[in-house]
Length: 310
Length: 306
Image (cartoon, rainbow over all chains, first blue to last red; front, side, top):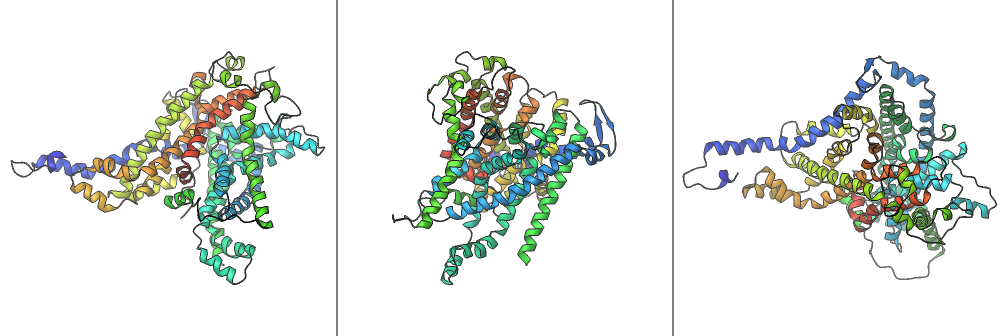
């Protein structure tokens, strides 16, 4: 490059170096993106297509496979574990998403006001978000599962006998629900805060002049204007529900806990792949999961846009 | 968009100063609720630290001790491998010190590589013109819709064919190239004025020198946010190590925790060590978070604002 730009006493820059410079200018973009795209191609993009092929095979080991057509997909229809995991995931999702939005939007709404100590509150609420999921799983396994949990002492004050919650099927889903909310409310609160700050303050001022109460302003200004942000948070939570693995693995184990009450999609995919080594069926499960996630995301976007049109 | 998230994260915390007035019942109620929520979010952390200072006998006791009555640092010494420990010997003799170094190495290499590759590609996508630019970028974005679980089995087969099982390569190499990182860096790069790049080229900078000497320094905050985000992801990663590693000397922190948590028959689960190791394992991230909150929140909530 230096050669090309330094004025030479021998006349204009020599043609070969100039053309080399020109070629570098043209090829540089490809050189810049290729380290990324080579790695991403092998370990990111190719596996997505490769998984389709894998899902049509029966695998005896990592090198022995046999084409079986739609057998793995047909098995989805009769696999009890898949049906339980899917219904558990949907039930939990239906509970998690609205609660997540209510809690995070309320907290964000309060912390958007100039309140004393709000940076302390914000930091504290965000702490679980930066905590390792394995640690989250370990902590809640102890708090909600162990007889030596402080929860037992608290319940004793009210004369309630406590023997741990995770060994009783009815409490497994609430336990997972509590764990998810604890871990993610702070994250959604930050998303909501970002949205709230884009609402012009004059709108609230005008509403107050018209005699609207705080609640009315919240329902008629905040909620409609936050629709997109709320939809975004709802989509993220839904996707998250179908991808949960680490916390659930630590909390209820790969089998989904007592009565399979905590069996989730993330757990059965892992289990089929790396406990049973059914690579073909695991890939079919993963693709079914992906299709459900994408369909639900589009559905939520569609619903939110339609609500806006009305 | 990243900037917006960042502005919020930086927040007007010191904001307009509020004069002290007697709180109205409504304000009182608000603070009451906020403090209850604060206690719920903080309590597990408190319990983890308090338990890390208790001997095992004081954890396996009813009624529970809300405060360590016989505080000791032995758990820390034991988990670090500084005093003899049956629990560690039963599980392959690898201490927290070793796994801490393993995790540090993997996370640092990954973060450095990820930021470098993503910023280079992000620069090309944001500022250079070339054939197929939009098509490549859009198809990369499209793959982000596919959940990671789809890639689990194919990646395992690839790693098995490469004979990379029980090595760190599966944990390092794929993590170097993530679409989110490129997307994030590209968004940052678009904010760099074209005149700046033009000026650099007139001054004789070639394409790489322009990136390295002119653009990279300007987008350093974006790189910092990405680095923190990426470091945290790799530090906390569990599924990869769970799938690919079964030699104790290769364990990362989360895998070490999971192995501690699995019982050895006939012995109580070593909760004293588990709480201690959990606390030590989240400490680096907590510290980074407290000192670089702004970048943290920007990176984690990226993409939320259209």
